[in-house]
Length: 256
Image (cartoon, rainbow, N blue to C red; front, side, top):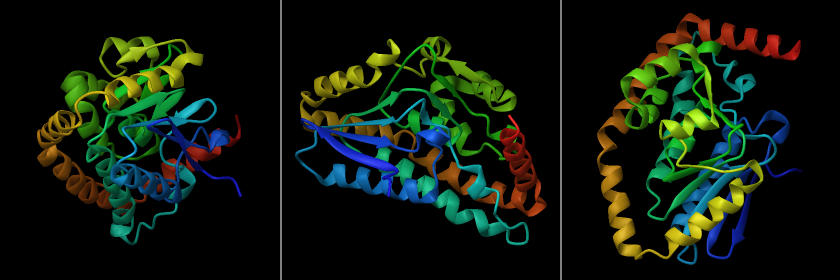
């Protein structure tokens, strides 16, 4: 059976690769659980000094596998709570890491994949990468997306990207601070590994305490975002609209 999330070591750097290239690494609950477990493992492993996350093929992560979330029941508005909790656990696993965490964005990073990328310390990408928050286009209220984007992009750009659902290319993403470094496509992973090596040589206590303070600045808004997501997603799924829109989106994709 193919491993959907692959864990490797590159010297003192943990490299975690999403491995569902035929679906642009759109993730399922099982993939998120495995990714979370690897992140927790690296946090506890003192031989790991830095973490790089990337994707195999043409995608970093295209976000939620809509075939999974389209099955939520409209007669049980809390059906999405466990789904939202899994994202909170995953994002917390990245935010709690007191080691440098670099996202090597080799292709599309959309929806929750884009949000996840924004939780990293640095993001390395290439000009043809596509990044954005198209959740609204498939009927999903973009609540945690607002939280993830706000501190990087501010209100105006966050609002525009969420409401239009358009994807930025690498040049635009770099110009607005989403990508911290823009390199040629073949150099994305190697550059991320170089940066991981450089950051891992910093004094570890100072690094950990600095990252802890950065996390504290957003702790309250993080918790509020997920509390709000549960409330708002329950209201949305109770209407059946997200399920209908996701099914329509999937049917349209199959005819392309």
